[in-house]
Image (cartoon, rainbow, N blue to C red; front, side):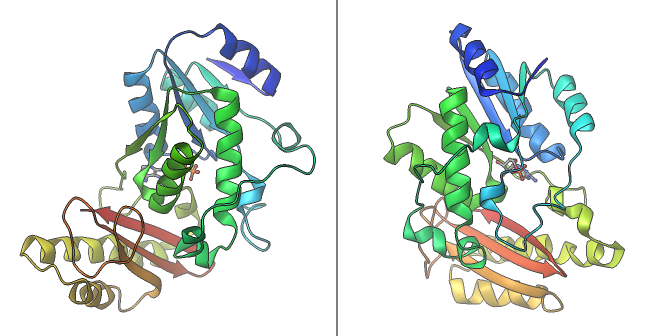
Length: 272
Ligand code: AMP
């Protein structure tokens, strides 16, 4: 595995690659969720490129940019083990130089995660577009865990006619159901235990739906009931384009929940 720091190194190497390139963009502190994306990329492409970049433009003032977990050495070992070909680890001045042309996410990026974090998705799309421009991937791998991000990136690729195939990847969970996240390290013991109610609420919803309950209001009530003791930020039931819906439509529904544990926001969702 080769570690690349500058965009020139990456661009020079990219010019020599004729075969398929699978790309996994991350912010590091890699866990089994990231690893599942890398493994899928490894299976489906000749060359695998992973990036690790904690992107400042997607953090709002007062968020955890400075505290965001950084584990470069462990991450390098993980990528090596996963047989990554190139690990791109740029510094901020490599990715952002001066006042730039900006990508503006559509209005629907200001609901749900975008309502809690206005402007967050502008920063996400900006960095993903830049990374796509450097890596020129055939396939790019994103987790369904960040459902709204996945939906907006899919739309960006379509709107800008980018010849890139976006591959959605399943959510990886701890054995007890908690969705893996680099931010889980912020949880204390009690919070870690309480956080289980998030995935439990989604499983309870799925059970109701399996019993043929299709009414969104009833399902939301069930989810709130299970998470009764938590600081729930939102529960949303939307279609794949993130429009609110009233009736569950199997194959075109995502249920999203966010709960707060102190400063830490935990996201989870299921795709029906
Ligand atoms: P991040 O490092 O948090 O920016 O995440 C990088 C990629 O890993 C994104 O596409 C995430 O959706 C994905 N990801 C994060 N957690 C998980 C998980 N538990 N299961 C699957 N994918 C994940």
